[in-house]
Image (cartoon, rainbow, N blue to C red; front, side):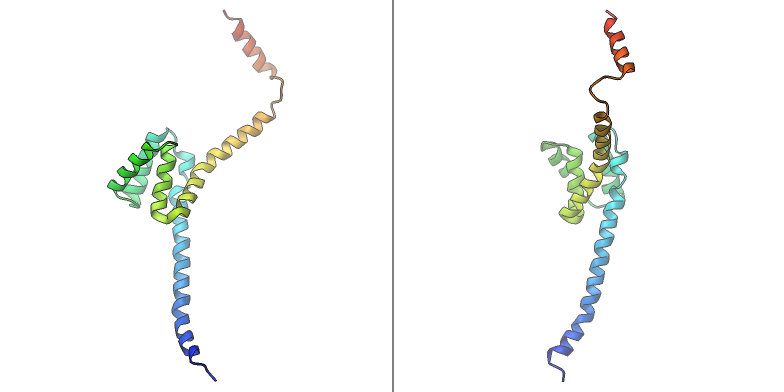
Length: 148
């Protein structure tokens, strides 16, 4: 014996499954877009904020068209006016506009990770130096100190 809900539930189930699979596909495509658009920026964006802003404009306004020129200029002014690293705020804002908070957070992590790994590696190296200066360094310091 079939209940009244059974044919309706069965009829509505198929589009729901199809919608869920499309949403999952869209989410995975969106995350892939964020990674592809941002993965190399933390490794290659040298030169400080003026260079970063030019790279962001070329990538996100001209090439990917995630935002338009007016939005870019407004974000630029806002990020410059607020305290903190302007290029990091700009990258976070552009990615947040395109994909919400999680997109901005992912872009921030991708942007910051290479520098964080490098600083951690240097800290490990510095911690191995010890209290005594190596002899080549101490002889160089002493020689330079004698030149008066």
